[in-house]
Amino acid sequence: MTNRVWFSCERRKNMKDHSSAKAIVLFTAFEPSGDAHAAPVIAALKTMAPEIEIVACGGPQMERAGATMIERTADDGAMGLSALSKIASVKKTQNAIRQWALARRVNVHVPVDSPAANFAIAKFMKARGVRVCHLVAPQLWAWGPWRLNKLRRCTDLVLCLLPFEQEWFRSRGVPAKFIGHPVINRILDQAQIDAQSNELPKGSPKVLLLPGSRSSEVKRNLPLLLKVFSDIQHNHRRAIAIMVTANDSLARLVRERLPTLPPGVLLMTGKLDAAISWSEIALCVSGTVSLDLLRQAKPMVGMYRTGLLSVLGGNIMLSMPNRLLPNILAGKRVVPEFVPCIGRAGPISAAVEELLADQSRLRETANALRALLPAFQGKRPDIEAAEAIIAFVAGRSPLDNK
Image 1: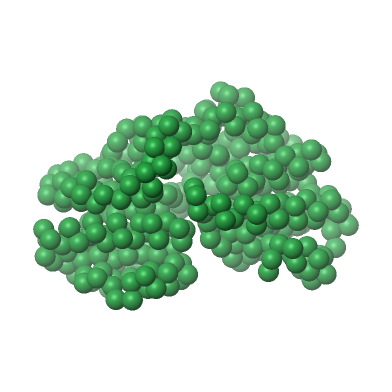
Image 2: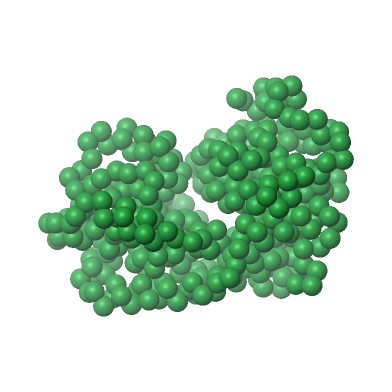
């Protein structure tokens, strides 16, 4: 459904009568990762405060968690130049949300990541007296620190997923709270993982290929991933690879581009934890999936293929020496990363080969990753985020007595 049609349709069909005093919490997410971050928080809210009406612009996971959807905005994502085509659509969505909110009293707005799309909505909500609780801190510590003033003006609290973010934002005058990360702070069903991984193909080395969670990322990085694996096969005749896509839509995209998969490559959707356990090393497109690998302390090589201008721009704009999340958390290079890169497979293949050639290096890398996990111990991201939102609904500060 287009944004133009959405507003009039939603008034008739999808929305309940919000003229009552029932508290309303609005979630807005614009990418699949935001959909995934918001869903467990929505589920926790439904359990902890069922009297709250939860309304969302987002994706299928948020809908399954129990939110009343007013717009689907998180079925795919875009970054960099590929995002230009989505600007008009995002602006229409922003305008539609403003119109919707004018007829209702929203108590709390929860922007989920995607600051470029969410800041305008948060600014509008804040001006109307709505409490704004950002879920997932904008990565201003990596690039764009000049946006801090904008964030201060349009937030009451930033819920941080990474340990160092709380102090970074608080020291700059932004209320912040570390709640843990839903990828890392989750229980793994090891028995199920073992059973599933035992069903996966045999070979050595076992290589996991993770092409990204956005269609634009898959299109850019798929040839590079396969070229690196081809180089691995040249040195290891028994090498086997599993490529795991984030959803069925991306699996179809891979099949469209590769009607016949290269020898030794199996395509799979789902069972990511089993595939991680099965593998000896992973090649991942930079993103949250690197934390799935960190959760199991799996050695990895990170990459993100883009154009030369984007590489040059990134070197100017990005203020941190490391861009892959495990390296950012460690404050040093614990796994090789090529983020961004212009698409040369040689250096990436060499980094993979260096790890595979030395089992002690693989063990050291796994231990370095494992050492990052205690910082997340005891955190409950969904519960802690829900508690903060409920506090705002009740007129209290989530930071009281914290």
